[in-house]
Image (tube, rainbow, N blue to C red; front, side, top):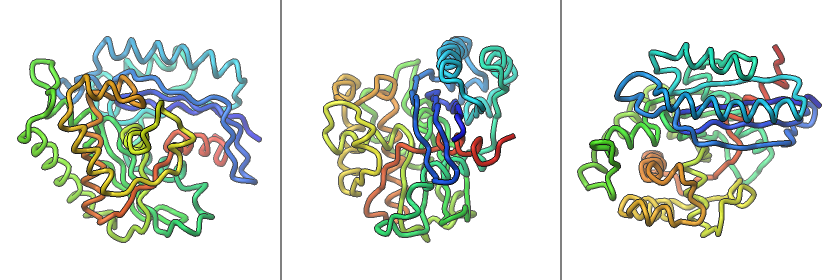
Length: 317
């Protein structure tokens, strides 16, 4: 066993996994797994810079995570930063802050590398499932970007495009710092147009329609699953490897896009940090399912965070 600590810092949230990894058995045993909404990507699409208050929230979470990593005595730590910090002009300020707090430099990885980690994390435990046909299409709907990976035992094609739930919300649903409540049909159509254009780009290099199993990752997808199951609270065990039919995804997406902030906030399984961005995230998922003709989405709680953990165990640096 190797005790590893993986940190995934995205546009909307920062997450920590401390786990014992056993490459011989393919088992990754959680010791601590948590998520904090920090909205690091606040305003990045508009300004090109990380906002001071967003950096402050992120560094506060890093301090909390540093204490947990020390408590568990992780042997190896890796901090991966994704879309927001990749795009920002002042990302050096972010890098210095993380290094000071955690003692490791954040790796601002490419979208393709992000996709590889997501694929490994999501599919490593699916390979023995006879009921889930290969190849898989793994879709990681983040805050700033969405990663697409098609593969069986190995990645056959990957692409990252800028259609994350936060980016789509800020680009099309925010006016004078106020989120549309609910969005207008014209605003929804504008989001859909962006998504369809991005899917056209993805299909230039990734064989989406060859996939036989759609695996969905990250908060937008897991929240849709929680809503589909009418969970009284967010329950990772109930969500992990749940299967949501296309018709249910469409019904939930239409409901979210026609509801008010208060109505979405009242959903028992809804994280407060997702209330304003879940509609756009669900629409990304629905659009993907329609593009490839998916009858259902298999929902995974294991994603890029687990892939980062495995990278430390399988390829220690």
